Image (cartoon, rainbow, N blue to C red; front, side):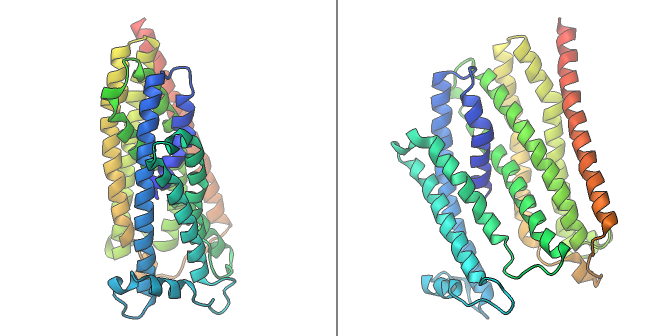
Amino acid sequence: MSGAIGATVTYASVIRPALRSQAAEAADIAVLRRRTASYLAWSGLVLLVAGYFQLAARVARAGKGMAFGDALAPGRIWDYLQAPAGKGAWVAQGTLFLVQNAVLVLASAALLALFLPQARRHLDALALTALPLSLLVTLIAGMPAVKPKDTDAALNPVFDQLHIVSGVVWIGGLALLVALADARRALGAGAGVLWADLWRRFSLVALVCVGAVLVSGLWLSWKHVGGLGQLWTTGYGFALLVKILLVLAMIAAGGFNQLWLMPRIVRARQADSAGSLVHLTLRHFPKVVWAEVALGVAVLGVMPFLAGSARTEAGSPPAVSSGSIFAAGAALVLTLAASFLITARVSDALARRGSAATA
């Protein structure tokens, strides 16, 4: 999902607009479009294969004592998808997974088509078709088969999907851009201007994703962890603690880019220093992004261990929302928005101060 959703969203919101700007040269556009098409095509293949194995894993968990190898059989998968709805369910869970995987196949097909040279001329159409389809893959899986019994039960899948989508856009977008930056030897001397625009645009996307990850993550953590002590006394809590530290490290790396590298890129662009701009945008900046990608992959590696709940392991009562909880959440959202605005203004101020000093 990081490959499919992250790459298509980043292409639509960052790469496509930047390639249409006047700063982009025709040769550089051709290189980046070709590399993007290849990346998206491989993402489609990974999505298709991973989707099949994930569906088989669901079948194995649903069957009593069924081995994973047995669950790979198409007949067993089909039986699982045709299972009737449970008591009180508005739709069978198997039907939801059937629809989800049908959409997954369509999304994969749109991306896999980019392996064909003649299809790459329609990169925009195929990427923009795969984008909503790949989003639907996770959104359909997050739909509850049973009517939510209260407000908390209705909000949980919403925050789950907000956390998943924002996280995969953040990680997947970083991975796509750092992979494209590896094409620097095939780009022209003026490619630094284009890449300065690419990093600037993605910085805005990343800020939104970070905010969504933090807000949704705090809600989910509150639902599953009853106190700080449970972070190191329960298996769920310890896995969550590791994930939190990894995410904070990613945020720190992003802050370094925003407050130190971005101002230098702006100053180099204003000074019309092509050599410095290429060095910063295609050599220095990607090194930090590679570190973010590695941390993001580590976060994904921790996710399978976040099963169950620390509250359940510790015997704590379930979390129940109230007006004060929602008020605290609203205050948090406003605080995050203010902090991101201040960060952007500080970055601009550092760039202007450096330009004035140079002058």
